[in-house]
Image (tube, rainbow, N blue to C red; front, side):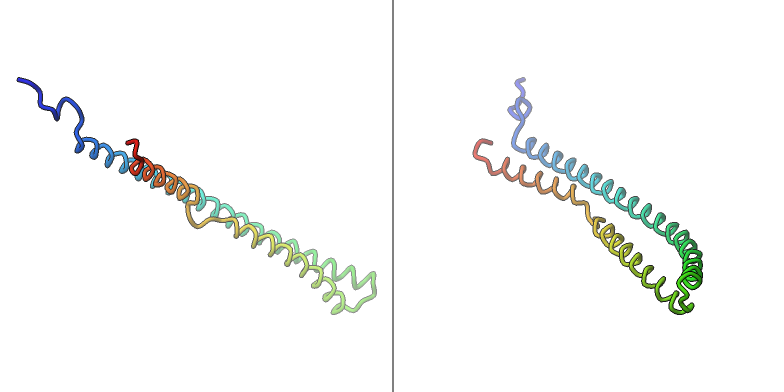
Length: 138
């Protein structure tokens, strides 16, 4: 008995089934990539938060001690009243707070809330598939 034409060469349904399987596999890989990218960004966010919390506690204690020392030194050496010494030190601290705030704003702006690289790759894959499907060569 001769084999039928369906077993001799792949038919359109077989090709479509392979195409669907490839698209499903690609979608699953893209999903895993997006998940991995978001986990990486979330881990980065947690590390930044922990570092900022520790930094905040240590800097607060350090600043408190330095402020008292600076107010006392300014009062003693410049013969300023305590309230005047306190205002001068507060102005200096204000400049540091401004600089630190600008730095933190810049760092927060660098955090991505979406998987940018994965979205780029998905767009490339969609464009490639459209080109392959629409192309007169296939």
